[in-house]
Length: 249
Ligand code: PGA
Image (spheres, protein in one colour):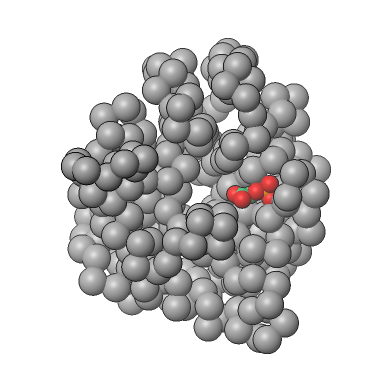
C-alpha cells in the first residue's frame, strides 16, 4: 500500500479548489494499491469532503485547533474537522512551526486532540538547512518525535509520520529534493526510534519537492511508505500523472 497525500496549502483560489476536486473525483484509482488523501484549505473543506464522498479519496485538515469548543476566535477544532469528514490531519507542518511559530507543545496538544476525536494525525517532522549544517538533523528529529509523542496514549491508535526536510520543501514550486537514498536512510532510523512510542508499524511518508518525475525514486525505496506532495499536487495533469506512475508499480 502506498500513501499519496496532497497538501494544497493556500496555493489555489476558492474556485480553483472546487474545479480541481471535481476533476480529480472523476478519476478512478486502485484503492487496493493506493491511499490518496487531499488536504484542502479550511474554507473549501466541507465542499471538497462532499465532492469526494464515496470516492477513492479521503480528505484531511491542514491544521487543527486543539480545544474542541469554546471562546477561541479563529480556531477550527479537530472535532469540527472530524464532523465535516476529515479522516486525517497534518500536525506540525514546518510552515506552521516556522511561519506561525507553533511550538512542540502545541504540536503535542494537536496530536492528542486528533487522537481523541478519531482523526489520524500525520505528524510532520524535519530539520532545517541550519540544523543540517550544524549536524543537528538527528537531534532535531528525535526531539520533535519525543515532544510530540511522549505521554500520548497510542494504544490501538493509528498515526502517520511525514519526514519533510524543511530545506527540501518547495516555495512556489521550486525546491531541492532530498536524495531518495538519504531520505530512505533517515526513514530507517525514524522507524527504529518510533518503536519506543508504539508497537504499531507507523507509515512514514517523504515530503519535499516530490513531483511526477521523481516520485518513483522515492516510493521504490524500502523504508518510504508514500509521499506528501505540495506544489505538484495542485495541478491536475501533473498530479494524475504522479498517481498513475505509482499505481503502475
Ligand atoms: P512541496 O511541499 O511538495 O511543494 O515541496 C511539500 C509539503 O510541504 O508538504
